[in-house]
Image 1 (cartoon, rainbow, N blue to C red):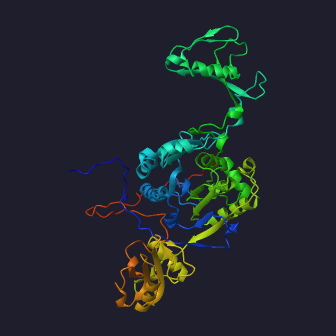
Image 2: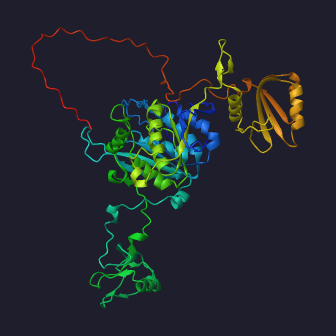
Image 3: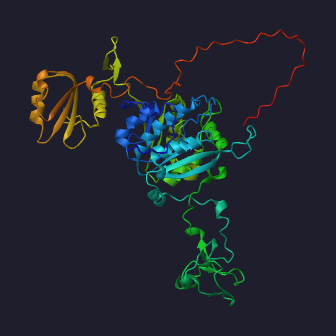
Length: 552
């Protein structure tokens, strides 16, 4: 029987998968800031390795992931290498999406900013990674409020692709967005109703239902029947209750077709829709002004998102204290907005602007001196904190003979934590029993040591073990008699036990270069060189005025 085929996006090098090393994270207390009990995390390092480092502990715990990856436009941004060849870009994004999807909780959602250039490919790729049934919407963000005249057709928008772990559940739990004063203008109070502003909603519905086809007589005696092809929106008994409560409006003269009254005070919010205009969620100019207000115009981040845009995403997808993750943190906007909105957050950034932009920006947020962006709207006065982490170096490195050895930067605690992560244990040293450094279940433990393990040591551990407990011992070397000494004690050597599992020593997954296929029989290329032409007669020319630059 032939293998079942599926619809998928293909590209050169798609089959190449990175073998990621599960690194540990090391806190740099000097760069952590604010409340020491805060759970927020700012991570500096390659974001694919950082996501792998988070996977074990945070799988199924993140409520909202938002990423704004490099758009592969070929533009030369100072803080990003944004000109990655198409296939490389797809591989780069695919590997990250797969881990991000695992980190989402059952009610979580994934939001990705993207432009026209890669959006169609990204949509198909996300269908493959997340499942086509997980697609929620493609939102259109109006990033400019003025015309763009540099292109054949002016570029004034970007997209926000949204996928949810459970679309049906997401529809039920997603939040409404607050109504704006512009939207509230339709609510008036022509009859000085003591309950305030209201609007009339036509009391008809499409279709034919016999119990909703009754006649209605207005206060002035005019009789109304449902319009052709429609019926009243409620049964007669419910209509009479509404009329008795004063919730039916027949127009100023009392002759009009009935409308139900809906008060502005009863409106919890608006159902989100896919058109996100700049006057509601901000634009690129607004975002740059926010950055200028924090850092000045010199060396400001070139591609920030406005705080109001991130606020809208978190308004819809999260509630207070939910966990938000952004693995392309950039200038720190997502973390700043999450903090101001009372969400927990994890931000990952590789570039130097993690130090030049993210840390100082978040410090200003926490100490309350950042009063730009959404601060005034949400009443932000400061508070909270974050812990700053670096990715640990690779656990193994090659010595001068080409053999893998444990990196000398690893002390005993770091080695124990790293081995626990490699073996799928949670690093949680017991305060009293030294060999219980981590556990995978209630009765399964791991013990890592750099000492030479003897039978005597195993005997001591065995005597302390309870019934049905087991332990994995990881060490550099051990007595041969230790092998299979006890059925509930497994002993393995470092680094031999780790070889072949992952790519040790690799710190950068931002450019996984893939070579194009080559024809081995193709003739060697020999450049022809420029065609020789007679030198032209030099003539004096008048200076030409420089052209105007059409820049934002």
